[in-house]
Image (cartoon, rainbow, N blue to C red; front, side):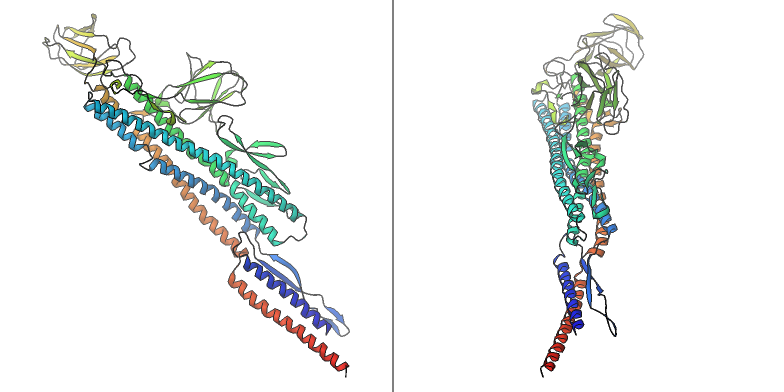
Length: 626
């Protein structure tokens, strides 16, 4: 009878715990990272009586946490990669909208500016058309600056994101290390404690990428995507943000562990932090540099063309746009006192990529700042022989570089934000060709002048009058110099201008070239300026400015679409990993309801065993009282 009571009691306790566990599962169905639990039962050791062994009921062996380490690991990996791609996609999409939308992109004001120059070429003396050119030029400059400010704003967001993310990483790593300490000191840690640790690890990896490895004693070590230790046992490392050595306003991520600080390579980061850094490196920086290259090329090309014209005051054209010199930043650890100056030397060779200049103790070396690949460079760095790399000229203005001093050359970064219009007086727009050609009315031959153009606007004698006089049908002089041989259709060049002379001039025929003069309605230079957007001036003379505008929009749009496609694909992979994990660890209400009914019936049956034992005991007592 006592054996019957013990059997019932043990069953009642076991089924009560099992029912409690089922209730715990149901209560945590929506708890992130929760793994369902199951009570493991086994028969209690039998007791020997004189007639043989008799069972003693049931006992609880363990409350088992239903988890698959492989499925958890897959979910961890996919979660870190998903966080990286989602971060990259979100920011890239915002940048794509900036360039593709008519209200915020560069295409509309760009077209309006060149349309106004084209209108001026049809009415070079019109004051309204001149005002329109200046207005559209200022609108274009304003749009360049607005876009550049938006790009700077995204760069600032990346800094803020890195700061916030490193703070979260440190909090999570510290808590994981504390849980490791608790779990490592327990022979049988609770499933809830293990779930909490796994959930924190998942959140941590979503920021940094990486993986987790279980060591002896149940402790879990967490590593970043680049293999840097974030949590080792009960010790947590610390992530900090540090200023870029060339651009202090830009933050990088460093790891502090064992008293040392190591700046993490951008390729060693995953998760949300990796997405932020990758966006800045592969999408934002190239867009800023290419926008700057377009602004620089516009300013250089238009200024060169404008200087080749004459304004309404009879003066040669000055620069139409203003633009600062290419950016050059010295490394914070340089020991020399060298000061370098930069200028754009060749638009056709202008490359938006950054260049790392290093003095090796004897000469300057140019490399790619990210890959270390060598970049071709000529010159020695003197004013007479400047360093020339990717269309930029660099001169050692003063001081002396020390061995291993380094400078970061950003040929076009920030140029769009500093573009300006140099003139405010519409009369200063150099729409006219500065020289004009005339044919003497007394000429008797059939010679005709055409195609007059300026070939060297800087020639000091450009505006000096010149007379072309023919000795006979095959010889001519210019201001008395010569004679020169003449063939029909040839180009005659002099004092920075050239003209085509065709036909059959007669002896004594004279043609004159001289300054256009003030208040001219000549539109020759305006026509040239209106076509500069289609001039092949980039990429070694193979790409137009219009092509560069379209290429920039396509470049950003392609990056955004690729990031979006990758994020969508990774979401599918992550969902599959989540489903595989939930198949083992997830709570199924139907299954729990069935277990609840089964255990409830078992509990009631165990209660009935105890009630039966009590009835037998009471009957026995009653019999002994008789």
